[in-house]
Image (cartoon, rainbow, N blue to C red; front, top):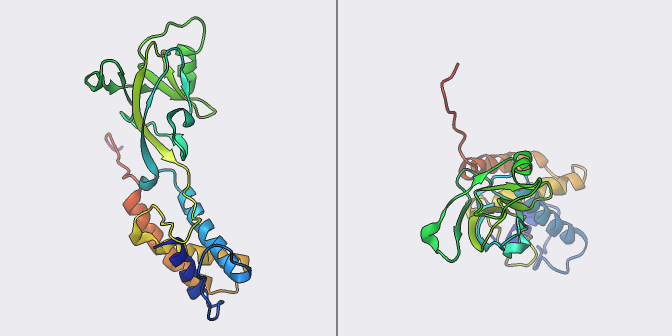
Length: 226
């Protein structure tokens, strides 16, 4: 569903708009402007509700600079960067001059361990074997690179903004109606309960349960149970 179709669904299901559904998500006033706003905000809040949505993971590839240990999302031209993903074996590296045959994983170190190993005293530039995330969100390599290395990994995207009529939410289409039902809930809160919020809540929760089962990683238990 497009942003316009979602806003139209919110307007229709609210029962508070007679006749004219929004014909566009831009240049609206009054009640229709509120409907457009809460539809867009519902999508923003759904994206921010979980850190591990699959559709919000992206892949990146960037090149280090000799002698430079710290990199931001902008360093690798990631326009919607929000955070680095540090799952096991999620980050690899190879010397650019040697090509992909040189590629291998680098290991994550907690920030304090990284500081003790690579951010104190005299250091010698070399091939990075570890990485960490600084408190300010920088991707840090240790040792500092002694050459140009190609780094490949994953990152979390910042929330997608719905702004134009044809914008389509990035999550699986079969769950798009959850945005409209949550938009109705937000609209109802804004209206201090004038809508039948229980219906919107029930349908939203049903779709969100399905969405979480589909898009969140499975939890596994390792080792013997006591």
